[in-house]
Image 1 (tube, rainbow, N blue to C red):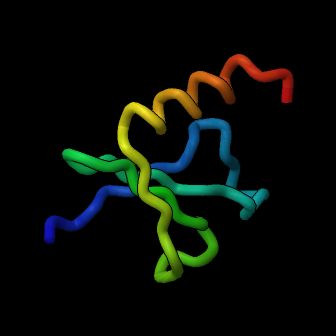
Image 2: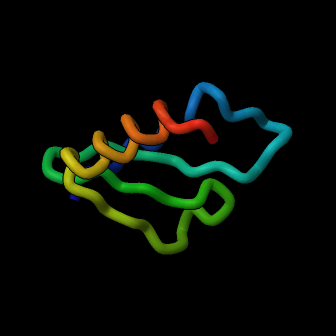
Length: 61
């Protein structure tokens, strides 16, 4: 298994630990809690992840 490279949003700060991290692999996108790096991960098909990101970017949150 290839080691994943994890990223946090550029909107994340070091002051707020409530973040998720994302790692892109060839066929899935991995998502984990930044406070629990060895904990469970969610995986999404890239198309589903893009739909979520597009929704979140357009949502009035």
